[in-house]
Amino acid sequence: MILVTGATGMLGSHLIWHLLQNNNRVVASCRDMNKIALVEKVFKFYTSNAEEYLHRIDWVVTDFKSSSALENILPRITSIYHCAAYVSLTDTDPKNYDFNSQSTKLLVEMSLRMNIQKFCLVSSIATCGTTNEDTSVDENTAWIDTSLVSLYARSKYESEKIVWEGIQKGLNALIVNPGVIIGASANSSGSAQLFELIKKGLIFYTNGGSGYVDVRDVVKIMVQLTTENHMNEKFIIVAENCKTKQILDSIADEMKLKRPYIRIGSYSMIIVAYLLGFVGKILDFKPKIDLSFAKTSTNIQKYNATKIKKLLNYEFISISQSIREVCVFLEKDQSKN
Image 1 (cartoon, rainbow, N blue to C red):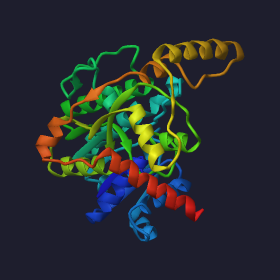
Image 2: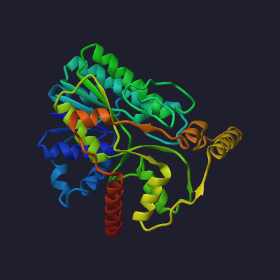
Image 3: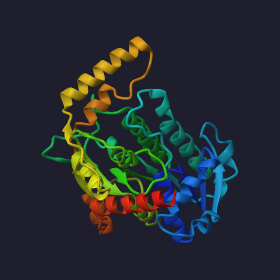
């Protein structure tokens, strides 16, 4: 039996769908049973009979603050896919990110105690270090904690350290580092924010750039790596390196909306961040944009996924196809409402 954490998120939902197609028994963890409707919406990307598949999932509610909700489940579990994470592009409160390392620590400790056979941590390319624009990051690039490192990246890096420590104690584990994940989603977090912003008439863009990947590629690779026992390693999962403007333009074109046309440079973003920080201290509020976000949003970083391509002989879905299919899904969903 397989446990998937973060089951109501985009990645968790698509992963469960893929596991069900292989006739796996799935236990799904969430923090709120009311959010199961989000999984149903993602399933509708694949089928018109989503309810049939929802009935094949065993649900468990946990906030990962204690082991009590999982103690009766884990003895039956052979593999864990840890997808649960707190993700935000703009949150500036470090306490909110503690969930990422705390949930990983709890699961690693319980996995060691209960002899879980396989453990897959979903991390991020944000933990893979940085290089200059002429070279790309791979699995061997050193992590350097700089001003460009976000609170989210630090929290995921701490999670990775916990898994590596577990491996030293005998945990059979692997780490995947997906790029920015594009896919059908039932909420507005992660890359889904980009589609929402374009829909609302976004006119600004930055010169930033990063690695992108379709959610279906991420879950298929996770399952294949785990099934084939490629353990005690980490893998970057990126299909293409794209400029942010390129992604936004592609979404706008598919939605038949106007492309963003006002460029905001790095200096302008930093000035805005400084001003918001100053005003926030005076008026006692936390700004949505801080210096870390201002710098990362205008940074260009390329990523190298040669390791996973060669190991699995894998062909990725193009990002243009991914964006097109998400836009079609969103249009169909909107027409039903």
